[in-house]
Amino acid sequence: MEETISLQDLFKTIRKRLGLIALLTILAITIAGVISFLVLTPVYQTSTEILVNQSPSETGQLTNQNIQTDLQLINTYSGIIKSPAILDQVVEEMNLDMTTDQLTSKITVSNADQSQIVNITVQDEDPAMAVEIANTTASVFENDIQELMNVDNVTILSPAVLKENPSPVAPNPMLNMAIAAVVGLMLGVGIAFLMEYLDTTMKDQQDIEDVLGLPLLGVVSPIVEKAELGPDNKTTSRRRAG
Image (tube, rainbow, N blue to C red):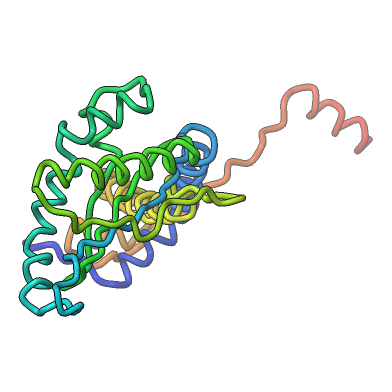
């Protein structure tokens, strides 16, 4: 016999275990909040913009061919910026207590489609250090690219600046707590249905009809036993009667 579960049964189970579901959801939100605010270290982000552009021609104009050449070079420049040839000098110049691979993990190089502007983005636990790394990387790249590629088409357009009250980009406590709430809710609902599935006790006549597949003909009411009078009580009763 195939067992089916109606929508009413689902809501009944959720309502029955609502306390457990709410407890797990609140617990998940609390744990996520504590970890986000007290455990995880804030990470700050800053960026430097560099412009890739050919020098003006003799007529004083930039041709479309030169612009297309610059756009094709941007991918090459992105790889050069994060190469040991550049970052080794950054580590040495700033006297950083980290390896080149560790510095590479902090730097992201990107540019918008069909744009000659390259963004050097740095993330670090110290906002001042992030600004210094971004500006030093851009400066070293601007100087070395002339020797590496025999070109002079890189200019620092917008250096990174340390803000007065920088805000961390990670962690995001509200996002973490929202995700934890969804996870806690799903976990609570899952455990509620699992407990209901494993609970095989029969609590009312409907459960008996569902298990046996037969209608219930009658119910035996509980019998309340009357208290018997002991010998002492009988003697007292006779004296009162006399």
